[in-house]
Image (tube, rainbow, N blue to C red):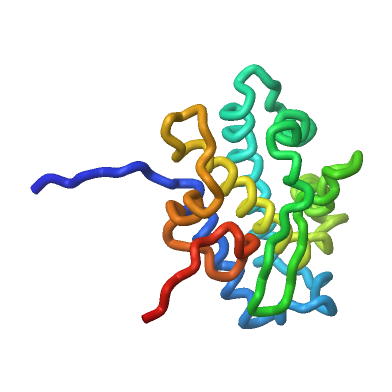
Length: 195
């Protein structure tokens, strides 16, 4: 029996797995503003996993966009990504089920790095002093940031010819299974016809 292998979307599959873990958290912590500062071991796990994956995928995306650009840290990512994706700071993520929307990369419109990134590094390097930064808000933003970076990575990785960029709707159509909890603007998705 022959098994046919198509292109793997390893980073997308990892995002979807993390999104499902985040969805499980919603059974115990209501996703609402009064709970944004809630912190826990599970939220630390999600923050670490999502921010680490942002680091991995951002490096790959920088390499696709500008192979000669340095890719040593988040400041290098910003320098490489913003000229190619100037709307990155304004890209909004929606959690419609809970009436939430946020812009995980909004700090890049100014001179600072995202607050969730600082929280991740604080918890990673000085957990005893900064464990309270492993919050729902930081976990949501890290997962949202991963959704956006993964989207832009696959828009370039799946494009034919390789030097082009897939249209937003064509990109999300290729990213299966679809994200269900965190979503981009509706303009990024084809409408589903229900018969």
